[in-house]
Length: 137
Image (cartoon, rainbow, N blue to C red; front, top):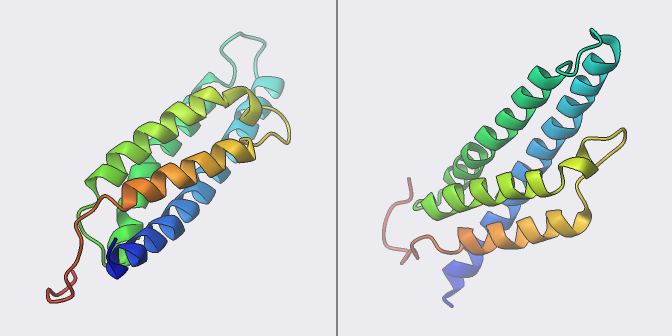
């Protein structure tokens, strides 16, 4: 693997970690909002469903955007695999651990977060290798 590829992987790891922190914070805050709405809202089975849906949708929509924007800020192009793959993996991860996140004080297990970080970093490395002769951006 060329030296530039290691730089791209490092940039990918930083981008994935930052995007994960933002989206995880959205999930925990949004699910708390949904629980509060359900607890204080009308006594229906659908209390808090709107808030839960908005939170989940926002997290799923924001993840690929943050991944792509983060890599572009770091002057890396060719991020389609990271954006699409990372977004899909994040959605599956959220669905897999929804019960752990959607409880008071709940968070996604560290093992799931580490797995996402590793998978996202690997996807970030799939971008085009830079030769050092072209202008970034």
